[in-house]
Length: 326
Ligand SMILES: C[S@@+](CC[C@H](N)C(=O)[O-])C[C@H]1O[C@@H](n2cnc3c(N)ncnc32)[C@H](O)[C@@H]1O
Image 1 (tube, helix red, strand yellow):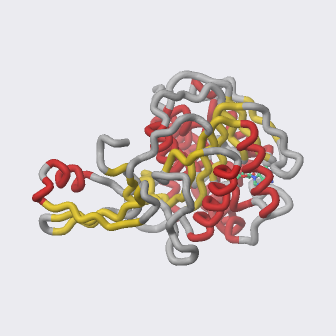
Image 2 (cartoon, rainbow, N blue to C red):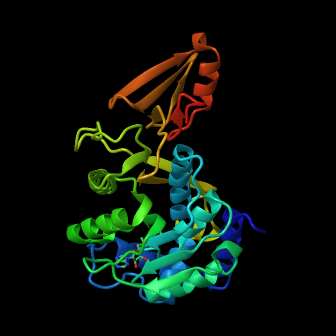
């Protein structure tokens, strides 16, 4: 089995099978409680094996899916580019390394940097099941003013900014911009996550980067601060552990995330992007778009638009619009 998404699912299922169910559920509950506490913290939240197994089983499928969505949109905007090397900062158990492998085939030097040793150890164990990640380096390091990033093609920062102080966030984004051709940042799809993404986006643009996705332009975000937040959703199959911890029988859930993918490479951003779930009405589809003229607008596509109407019925939240121009 070499498909990264399937391999990850199977590897994480084996990991959970090795745990007594009550112990696994307790570890997840502790993890959720810790993540509810005040962040940033002075020491890693992921402290021991039980914490990281819970993280990997409970959160990694969702962070993987969110990063994969962001990378897919990014890859469409830089169609001829394949990263020759990848650094995942605050990589934890390595979700973003799996997402990179899923987006671009082949192998490349991969480094995962994190201050939580148990996360790095488990990440390396999980990565043993994917040939593309077997040579990855798992490096213990603290993100802060002293962070030194060697020259690399792609830096990912997934669900990490939230755990850093303002100055450490700025230091990390500046260090990434100084070292990489492309930087992809993913945060939770909440107003606060979006605010951190916009802050990082502004810093990347100031450093000479252009936004490849989700935005159709590199001017200021047209959302008026405090009125809304740009976010997307990635569908994630629920594992047996999820069903155990979250009562209910849904087979999936939607992971909400905000992201920015920016680069020094030539980019072909989408003409517009669908920024809300399309509303399908009788004979018409309402699309909320962020457009290259730096505005948000609603487009109503009706049956009279022929093929475009058919495309609008298939359009999903987060897709480029119109189709074929991505
Ligand atoms: C929510 S986890 C995200 C892990 C992974 N990137 C993912 O998407 O699944 C946040 C990670 O950031 C790491 N982290 C937080 N603050 C850090 C710091 N100051 N230095 C290094 N790593 C840090 C944590 O140890 C943890 O692994």
